[in-house]
Amino acid sequence: MKRMISATALAAVLGLGGWFALQNNGVTTSTDATADLTLPGAANAQSAAASDGGSAPAVMEMALGAEDAPVEVIEYASYTCPHCASFHANVFDEIKKNYVDTGKVRFVYREVYFDKYGMWASLVARCGGNQDRFFGITDMIYQSQSDWARAGSDAAIAEGLRKIGRLAGLGNDELEACLTDGDKLRALVEWYQANAEQDEVRSTPSFVIEGELYSNMNYGDFAEILDAKLADQ
Image (cartoon, rainbow, N blue to C red; front, side, top):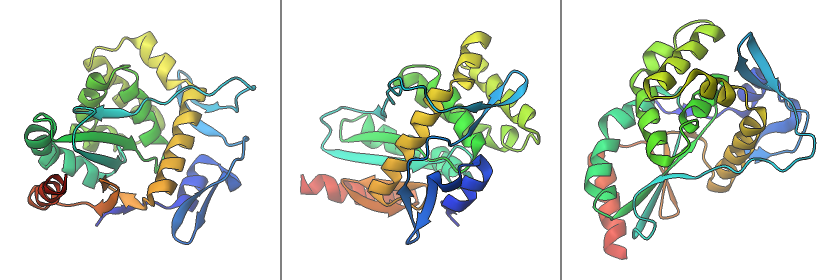
């Protein structure tokens, strides 16, 4: 069963109050600047306080493949979603080999945030700075999801993610800077919320293929849809 996005549940976990609301079984945007987003600091949890008026950090769109590829696929996924980990273990590599690397598909990955642990994982994945490194760290996060996501305490989960970052070549100071970047976290959550509302995403993994929304599927079904979209170009 796919993991469903529950705005109320996310609000409860993060203490967002009215900033995040559920409406007509979808995701809708509100603008409560007092939202408190939890970060894993050196002495346990810290918070992402509202910006003091400076411009929000830019959020980089993470994508693989030629910018002029005839078909675009956007994946919406959560790092704590088991079905997303299964997709990346069993389907994604075949899509990359047969469609992305051959210039047929541009594959965009957009994070969905069910909980603070998925947010922390996103900060680690994006800590690498470039897209190739992001997708490499993303693979590592999904491959070891059953370990770090079930580590128990906040501190243990944060340390599991730091370990992945170190294995990917990130330094301790670099990781701490990423994991305590409240402005970046706030920008990511607002970016996710706007994208999810625009594309009517309500569960993960979800895929927007040439503007049409699809739910999770196996490689055969995915390839059939991609071939049909390519034939229409």
